Length: 278
Ligand SMILES: C[S@@+](CC[C@H](N)C(=O)[O-])C[C@H]1O[C@@H](n2cnc3c(N)ncnc32)[C@H](O)[C@@H]1O
Picture 1: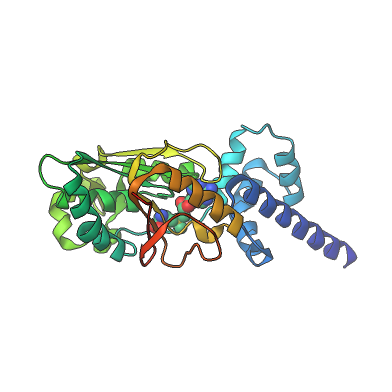
Picture 2: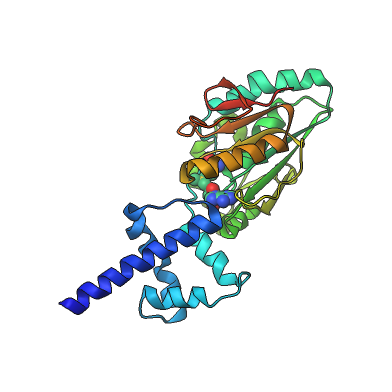
């Protein structure tokens, strides 16, 4: 009995240790309420290494070089990647009715967007569908999609999705943006080549200091990732995004996220929509 209780205490300590590790690596805060999730998600690594318990996995991690591929697998397993095409659709209305008309008047040629936690690609391809539909001839766009999780970036790179996801996309986009699979690809659709070619996907950690550049983007989306960060993490990220967006450019965050309590230089211009002074 005592042995079992000691093992349980040890496992709780190990799960706490994994939570501290993912906080340090990705900024993701996981309380003890998330221990079951951590246990379930990391179980496959115990199996892969033939380990008996989480203490053995902890020891394995502690002995690794910082650039050992196991760290990436660990990180990939502890991220939450839920996303949809046209998620939080009011943002795309705001893009079409507020941002694009003003941008067109500036005479610039290429609208540049960064989706800063793009997961499996639904967000970047939604942007590509909307921009290709609403930008007039002679104007172009480029989209950078980044994520810390290399597995989701592979899915985004493939740009192939199960047909069940087609219903997330308004019908007016189906013919122009999607190729439906036939024969063995039946049950899947692919994002059309001309849209995919406008998207570049890269690994990027929001809580590291590097950025894709200063004053580069007309619009940044950083949606449904700040919810996993503590106020210090959110503050670090918002400053970094502020540097990356052009003067007069916009930022979309998730509808359940906010900068409340932080002192920042953004102007709030709509629900979960911010603007950098121009
Ligand atoms: C819930 S998904 C949101 C996807 C999309 N933005 C949306 O709103 O549908 C959150 C994504 O944030 C990514 N993520 C978590 N921590 C990150 C970090 N430190 N840097 C970059 N991406 C991160 C996860 O891998 C995951 O794919």
